[in-house]
Image (cartoon, rainbow, N blue to C red):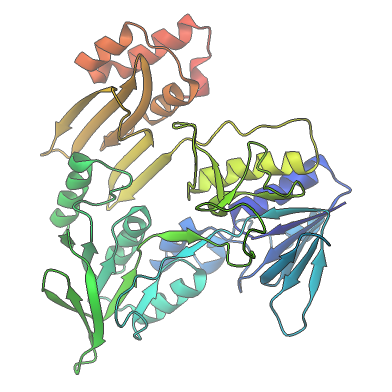
Length: 425
């Protein structure tokens, strides 16, 4: 049995290791299309500020790790799939092909290229791959003026690294707040205020419309509100999209990403998908969507691998939307249906002077979503209550009056059901 995994990110690596754990005699191949061993994108910011060496980004530190457990790691880029003959065609000068019995597509995602005149100008870059990071490391000098386009989750991770590199940073975000897909108005506004207090210049509610090279050698960035910014470098972080370009029209069912069932199986029974490219079950909504975060990728990978080797019937229970962000020392997080649900109730505590915020979202007597800033002590409890769907009963009304009693509510509710409170704490 030959299992082929296309993609060497966390989803691909975890799936390969899971396959070898449960089926030691299986042949497992990972197709890696980058000029580096499998690595974590989440480690790139630490590489940018010289906190780790490049090999510190690698998912497995031992260079012989894959061969030592019987995984073939080969370099190549997928150009097309022939589902009928179970053949992968690789995009190289040798016209190589690869046969599979079961296939896992863990091709990840790529940065969106904004429709900006001059976006290809020298000095404008994404920060998504190790190649991007190497480019920026060679370019950024302490005291440089840098413009970051986008203040979403990825943008704010890059923001931290750019500030610590010694750059004078300006952020441009088209929405009216920072991390708009993770934080509500109050929370996103608080993160903006925190960054402003740290010397970061931030423009919200506007976007870059044009980039040109000035006579000074700097970049000139024209904003939609008429302002013009000058910068030595510009970094684009305007979201990502699933890598599905190798698929022919209607070859597999594709929505926003490759559609999968609860076994992580695509419309072809011998082809599975996991990670950023997979449109999987959302725990909070019961609908199918893309969650481009590493915990979801790993969750997908384990379920897919077990079903590829038919290890019983393993169903994906749905990934919980979970984001934890460190922005210049301010910790923020959101879980589940953080924006609330129809006819739901909510409660908030806010202290703008101390940069503390706490919000709970309820549906009936279930906690379905939460947001916090500057408060990390209840992160495990928040996730646990949401993911276990524990009925709070009278505790819901008590929390609406005083959300700081969350730990009491958690302990009372879990002990009443005979749960071990250490599971989620």
